[in-house]
Amino acid sequence: MADIWNGIAIGGAGGAIAGLTVSLVRYLHTKSVESIHKRRVYKWLVENTTSDPGEAYRSTRAIASWTNLTEDRIRYICSIHEKIYLSTGQKEDLWSLYERGDRSVYEDRGVV
Image (cartoon, rainbow, N blue to C red; front, side, top):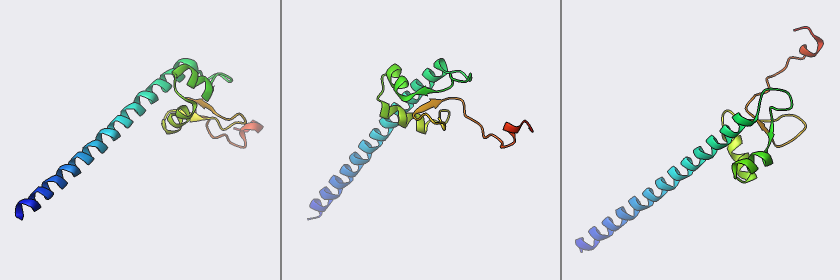
């Protein structure tokens, strides 16, 4: 009877280790693919944007077209990347490397 319980314990432990290994491999794969996509999008934005007005932002569709990723994937990657910023203007779905700073209410009046 003890042999049966030992077999059950060994089988349960082996299954748990296998499950944890699969979860770890899946997590590492997801993070590595995410890192590759972040690097690809960031590199493309560095090459294709400037801080000049009208050249600072690129659309999700343009980024997706040039990087061979889906638009949903671009939105996700840009939203989690610490150096890529979403436009806060009237046009939606634009991304840039140049953060728009907070502007003072006095700046428009020429006081600052």
